[in-house]
Image 1 (cartoon, rainbow, N blue to C red):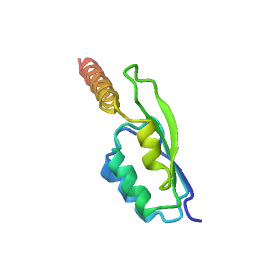
Image 2 (image 1 turned 180 degrees about the vertical axis):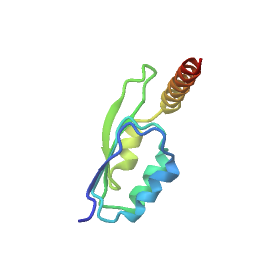
Image 3 (image 1 turned 90 degrees about the horizontal axis):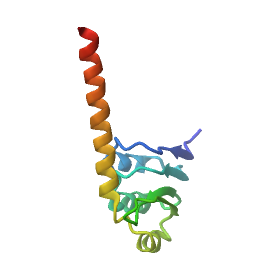
Length: 117
């Protein structure tokens, strides 16, 4: 059976380039990338240009309080949705995520060092 729905929510370790590998999934109808701040608008637009039947569920961060807005885009509405829900603070959210991962990795490293003693 062909893949029709794919959930990749909260996968901030993936790059925009990895998103474009989905262009080979011609039967894909719905993609969930909510809370993923690592994908650029350009990569989502490129994906939808190749997969015009695809609906993408994603999160936008248009305000300084970093309140998420969940939206659904399709090749027919992407320009309007991106204009009405700009991802202005995407980089700030991505920076917080990277700091969090860095702190978690440091805690893990410190735990390993502690266990060796």
